[in-house]
Amino acid sequence: MSTILELTTHDPLIARDGRPFGIGQGNRMRGLPWPLPSVVAGAFRTALVTCHGKLDFSGDMPQKLLRQVSVHGVFPTVGHELYLPAPNDAVAEPVDDNKEKIPQLHRLRPQEVIGGCDFPRDGLLPVMLSESQAKEDFKPAEVPAWWPVGKYAEWLVGKSIHFDSSFLSSPRQSTRDHVQLDANRGAAAESRLYATANLHLTHLPRFGAKESPSFPDRFADIRLSVRVQVDGEDLRQTAISFWHPLGGERRLVHWQPCSHTVIGWDCPQTIRDALAQATRVRMVLATPAIFSGGWRPGWLDGQLEGTPPGSSVKLKLVGVANGRWKAVSGWSLAPPRGPKPIRRMVPAGSVYFFTCEHGAAAALTDLWLKPVSDDEQAQRDGFGLAVWGTW
Image (cartoon, rainbow, N blue to C red; front, top):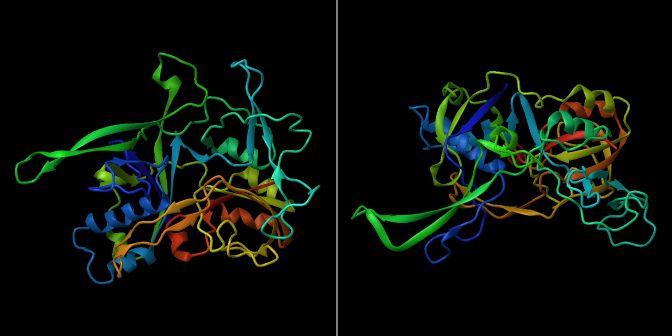
């Protein structure tokens, strides 16, 4: 049985990227725009042991944590509503130079090939704007980074939406300068300065908010939401209400079960109604995914057909709107201890367009915010959470 946790940050968090950092490598710690799923999963698994009191990491405990603990998230929430990252099939066209006007939002769709192309697989169609949508070339306008799940569901079923202050932008980053302390003298070490990039995750900027002296008009008060499932009997004995670091520099976060229902972890009724009669569906990644085929899910065969994990619905891939790949690595506590190999991720927001070849699309509602990555461990780590809609 899964549990929804609410995370409250005490300090700005550090989510490092993979660039070298340390003595002789670089003195600037660069950060990601949002913590990776594996960072959250690793922090929670560590907390289960350290906050238990009678458990430690000896023996087969690292393997048990990997096999028996699933962590999915993390997403911002405002009030009781979950927020999801912007889909890649949403393109905003700026309207004149009048800042008072709302940009026109277009939908990318698979289009019939007019000329030749060198796509990696036969049968794939280019995902782009139609001629009627893009009569003239334009530079896309900014799209909010985080969408409320209610508006997200409307977008997934083909309804028109307009950006307002309920949409949120990426978290603000700040840079802090630090000094290394000499343990013997208790003073600053000579020529040992370094800088860190910090994410402020207590508030997120409201998209398009005008300059206002009122802080709530410019920023939304948020909490972080994570879904966890603990299968081990000894691990379930840990009371999940603790302060524990998340990310770099041991920045503290309070972890506790959510006292209210978070709207969005379960499939919205709007999506259920739309998928009931659908023959064309799209899959949007809510967290970065790791596939054995790079951009292509390993559960698709050479004809681009297959069934997503946990479902019997046979799908055929028609087109993909994905961003540039991202890298993820880390450090393994399980034997053999050491650095993990670098893996390529399909970024969150990537959109996969399918046609239903066999089975009812309505069954895909059971996969709402469930992992579609190929590897079972990647699924338990929260990579590849997906939402579903129509096109």
